[in-house]
Image (cartoon, rainbow, N blue to C red; front, top):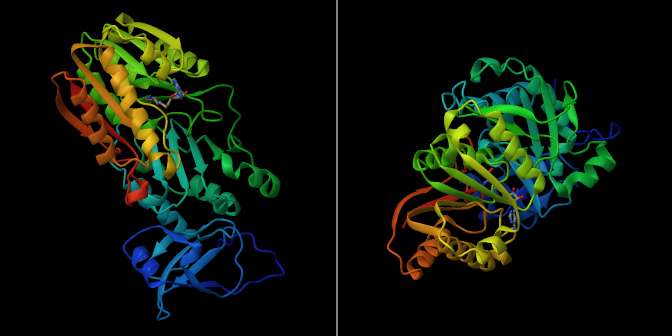
Length: 420
Ligand code: SAH
């Protein structure tokens, strides 16, 4: 079966061919996955949403194939580079298996929630695929995938994923579709697709329960942020677990208590979760309940405070915690917000330090792609120095292996650990 995006039947369109500028040619050849509209110097005809565009260099040599989006300045997202190949069902299946195989050996049966496809960096530009136990969640960030969804679903249900995955996945029992906010209107209007829709399998009457490093968590895969859980913080949580023994922990921007459960299992005396969302804190309390059988979790005092964490940290200046985690949402969604975001990170750390006991550890994380790791780390170090307290920096971290970042704009996650 040839996969064709839905072109009108009366339009057996000839291939959409693009010629691009030498600069864009160089960028694509070096592996960058985006072609902007202003880099196109010749186009054989108007293209349709999701259509496969074939990109040639100045000398008319084949360069790449990508998904075309006539509405977006980011006009083509690259699927295949280098050697031409038909984009047919075999190709799609191999493309999926390549992403799955890249994760071989990363997880054992104690971790049944992780990312299987991380967008551009896995050759699936604008699409992520997460596994939560036997539920798969596809989230798309570009409308160019909308015409391809039934094919994506077919591949997910027929590719031999099972032997490659850890745990007892079996065939995925359910596939959920998540849509980024910007594409929800066109998805509904043109494709009758909605955010949270079940593409395959039974309805859900609550969150999905999955394992991360042996801890049980719930994920609200239908309505929750991202695909229902912040799978990208797994490695940082493991590190926090190793640091937590006997400590009194403050987890600011806790969401559903990911860091808190690890800290509790690691022997923290008490954990306080701060989040603005009552829903997130209710999930955190349920996640503690789910793990009561662990002695560390059972013995840890768990408090939740629904609050604006910026204000809370500002108004609490008595040192009361000896492990503080600061993991705010992205503070720079756009490039112009970059310097304000850096200031906000510094302010969080400044106020956080006022609550940190001598000997305490501060972990500060940023998920803003517009703030580079170097900028972020330098800003936090500067704030730590300004505190006039002695400190040592003992670790910095980046994206975990199931969230690879193969191009600069794909890098977003960084965390720095300081001991005072
Ligand atoms: N650390 C979490 C992920 C944090 S995501 C984990 O490991 O899973 C960011 C969280 O910050 C979200 O739960 C969001 O509800 C919360 N949030 C956003 N703005 C906030 C604010 N001003 N004060 C407190 N929480 C906020």
